[in-house]
Length: 190
Figure (spheres, rainbow, N blue to C red):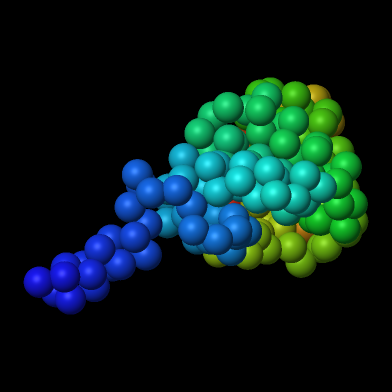
């Protein structure tokens, strides 16, 4: 009887029953797996556990930033992205996260600055944990933020990097309207 029950018990333990304590060290890979599966609370817990084991792990703070950004805890996301950059200035993902979060806050100047920093570090950026996010999205956020700041010429410059054939006169209301329409159109295809 014990021989029949033992494999079942081991299966439950290794399958990750939530009532059992963690077996082994926390894992960045496991945390990102949770993130990619849309299990953001589990990802947060795993990233926090990683930080508990490695307080200077910038990638764990980066992961927390993305999780909190998706969960709309925007100021917490900003704090974690900035901590990630303080811990590891070679990271680029936090700049993309900051661009999106600052745009949503709205803090458009910081969104422009974060997007510019990302593009300077990696002009062909893509987020490895979500194939939908890349440099085009960051340029689009930058263009929108430039518009919100009233800097339509800079917004046009960003749009033209995504669609070189687009042009308009941003000194006129019609040109600005055309620019905003192109940003919306690009948002649907980028």
